[in-house]
Length: 211
Ligand SMILES: C[S@@+](CC[C@H](N)C(=O)[O-])C[C@H]1O[C@@H](n2cnc3c(N)ncnc32)[C@H](O)[C@@H]1O
Image 1 (cartoon, rainbow, N blue to C red):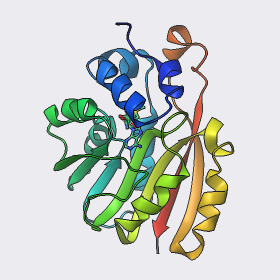
Image 2 (image 1 turned 30 degrees about the vertical axis):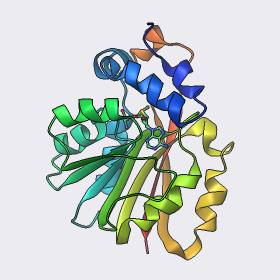
Image 3 (image 1 turned 90 degrees about the vertical axis):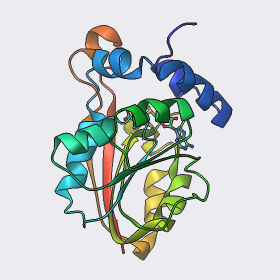
Image 4 (image 1 turned 60 degrees about the vertical axis):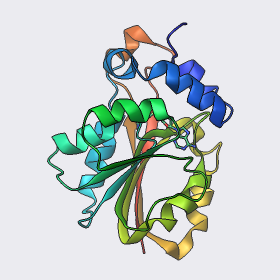
């Protein structure tokens, strides 16, 4: 088996392919991919969420993977409950071992979610991207957010137009407020040597509040 990489992940075409790829990637994701690429997006997303003055209450990490975003939130001082949802049981299994999450749920975030409508924060890094999740997840996520909940979602800049994120956010109208976005680098310096094709990739971190 060869270790999965970004090109394989970006070419995914459905839930089964996603589960297979991440089952092969889960063990080496942190040590090989995240460390090797100096993967900054979880920290950028955590910082954007904390800057947006979120209300107290539980946070849901969407496409939580191995738990890098929860680790970034904890590292920045966030002490409240964090839950994880992800399609891949293998990735959630790695995340569970870190002891960062209150509850871990295997589910597809593009469908109605088997979670209570209690979240004061919805965060996500690296999941709204090529071959993964598009704006169709916004409605199921809004449905489980409480009024006033703060969202911070990274969206790969290359799919922002292609998958229609601006249109989808616009269509939410008065259901959301305070919409803002900031462009960030996904990777650091180490990525130039490791994967020059993706080293300069950017994401937009979208922040808004459920009204
Ligand atoms: C690139 S990883 C990002 C993981 C983590 N958030 C991070 O920043 O390291 C993308 C994650 O999204 C998950 N994913 C992909 N499609 C999904 C879906 N429809 N529903 C839930 N999770 C999904 C994958 O299983 C994978 O763990």
